[in-house]
Image 1 (cartoon, one colour):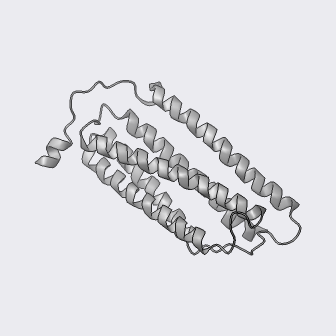
Image 2: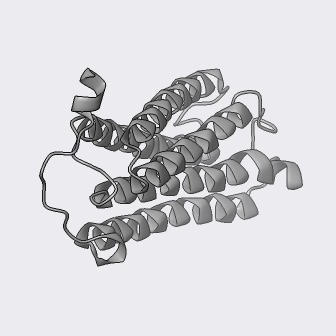
Image 3: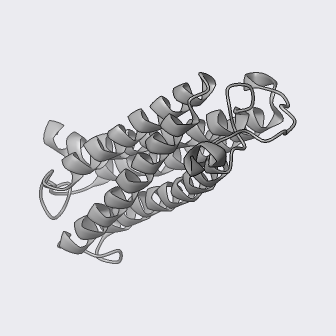
Length: 200
């Protein structure tokens, strides 16, 4: 009974939806800007790799022992975000709560595993150009994941308070956009630092 009352939508203004919402365009601008940052970093990786004399990466081929499960976890987080976004549009606030709670857990696990990945590396930020590129790029991505988790947590709390429903859910969709962006960026980072070296 308490859950039903907590998820009951209060009388709040609906506002614009989808691409008519100013927040949608604001988030799109953020995504384009941040995508350019990661594009520069990935370009730097391939440019420096093309100029390298000797083995690249210098410390040998990267292991996928942590990175591959981490990738699957982040992809699963995007699935639960998609499910939550889809659910609230159908008026199922409880499903959104479950989906976003699962995303929070998966995101935290991703960050913890990424921390273990950092610790296991045989190089440091100042070891060489590869080390600098690796820690800067994955570090920026970890910051973006953390921002996404804060965003998901706030949206989860607001949903629990009954702020969103079938008619009022623009913020949920905007938050989902950011989380999917974080996932897509990681796929590019994973392909660059973990898959490309095996392709020569």
